[in-house]
Amino acid sequence: MNEPSSRPGPLPNPETVQFWAGLVDGVVRVQRCRSCGAAQLYPRARCRSCWSDRLTWEDAVGDGTVWTWTVVHRPGHAAWQTEAPYAVVVVELAEGPRLTTRWGGDLDVLSVDLPVRVGAQDQDGYRVVVATPTGRNAG
Amino acid sequence: MSLRGVAAIVGAAELPPRRESSGTTTLAMIADVAAQAVFDAGLEPGAIDGLLVGVQVGETPQHVAVTVAEYLGLSPSYAEVVDLGGASGAGMVWRAAAAVQAGMCRTALCVLANTRDPARVPRSPNRNPIREFDVPHGASGANISYALIAQRYLHEFGRAPEDLALVPVIERGHAMLNPDAVFHGQEITVEDVLASPMVSDPLHLLEIVMPCAGGSAVVLTSTDAARSGPHRPVVLRGAGERVTHRAVSSAPVLTSSPLKQAVADACAMAGVTAGDVDVLSLYDCYSILVLITLEDAGLCPPGQAADWLRAHDVSHRGAVTLNPHGGQLSCGQADLAGGMAHVVEAVRQLRGSADGRQHADARLALVTGNGATMGEEVALVLEGGA
Image: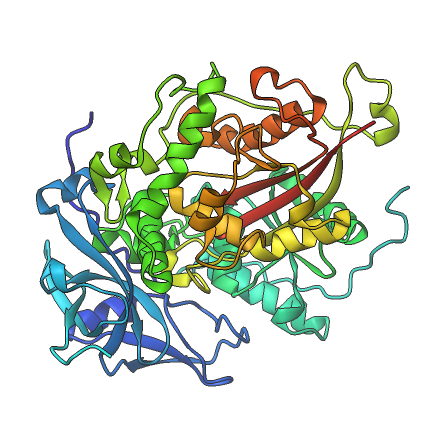
C-alpha cells in the first residue's frame, strides 16, 4: 500500500477558475448561456445545449434541494478515511444545474428533496462547496 | 456489401494551427472545432448521434468518448475512440460510414484536437470533470456513485435495502453451478448481505463486485462463414448503444438509464421484445444496476424489479434465466473483461454448452454492457443458430 496522501483538491483551469474563485468569495457560481438562456455546471467553454460560446457567470441564489446523497463508510480515497463516516450530496440548484457537495448538517436528517443552502467551506487550505439544511420543513 | 457510396461528408472545419494554445483545454478545442463543423453542415448539436474521438494526449485515458459526449451535451447512439495514431482521422471516416450503413447512427461527428502548452507537463491540462468537481468533495470511486443512484431509487419508489440485497443472493445461488466463479460454493442470504459492512449507504459489501484477474474474448465472422465452424453459430440479431455522461451530477435521471433506449433499439433491430428472450446476461457491477436494467428492458414497471425477481424463477430452470453463471457479483470483475464475460455466457447458453446450468430452450439472449455511472450503455440481442 502507498502511504495515504493528502486529500486531492481542486484543479482550476481556464474554464473553471471563476467557479473556484467564486467559492473564495463565498458564492457558488453557474454559467449562463446568452444565446439560449440555459444554466450549466460543470463549467465548459461552450453551452452544452446550443454550443454557443457566449457564456457569462452569475452568482447562484444559493437555494437548492438534495437530488441524492450517500453516507460514505469506506472512502474510495485513503486520505478520506479519518473523515468517515461522512456524507456526499448531489444538490439540484434553483437555477437547474446539479453539483456534488459536502454536507454541513447532521447525517440523520439527510433525505432526497430536502431543501438546502449551498455555500463555501474551508478544506485543506482551499474551498469546496457545502450544503446545509435550510431549517425549513421539507415539502 | 461495401461502403461504396453509402455516406458523405457534409460539414468540415479546422482551427488555425498555432505553436502554443495557452489558456484553453483539449475539450474546449474539441468543442470549438466540433461546433464549426456542425454549423458548417447547417446542423444543430441535437442532430449528432454518432461520435468518434481520438485518444487525447495528457487527458483522461479511459471513458474518453463519454467525457466528450458529456461535455458537448450529446447522447450518441454510437460512440468510440479510434486509436490509430496519425491514421485516426482517416480511420474515423470509414467507421462513421459503416455505423451509418449499419443503422447505428444517422449523423456522425469525427473530431480530433489537441492543446500545446510547453509550460505544462503533461502538455495538456487534464479536464476530468469528476476529478475536478466530485473528488475534492470526498466522492472518489464507483461505490459512491452507485450508492447515490441506489439512494435515489429507494426514495423514489419507496423500496427497501432488502430489495437490493435480493440481487446478489439470487446470483450467488446461480454460481453454485459455476465452478469457475470466485464465490462458487458460497451461498448467501438477504440477512448476510445486510449484515455485511456498509460501504456507502445504502450499498453493502456483498452488493459490490469484487475486482479480480481474468480475460474474455469472442471471434466474429459473417453468418455464411460461421456455418462451416465447429460450433452452432451465435448470430447477432440486434444492437443498440447510448453514451451520455460520466458523473452522477450530469445524469439525465438516476432511476433509469440510457440503456432503456439502447435495449429498445437492439430489440427493434432484432424484431423481438425483451419478453421474447430466454437468457438475460445483464451487466451487474452493483445490485442496484440489475434492478434498473430489468425495468429499463421493459420486463417490469419502474420500481418493481424486486417484485418481478420474487415472482419468477430466474435460474436456468426458469422460463427466462438471469445471469445463470452467477454474474460478476459471483464471478468477480476482471476489469473490462468482466463485461465481455456476459457475452461469453450468452454464447455458452445459446450453443447449449453450459453444462449443469444449461437453459433447456435457450434461443435468444439479451446482453447488456454498462460503463461509467450508467452513462455508457450497450445492448445486444444474440440468437442461437440452427
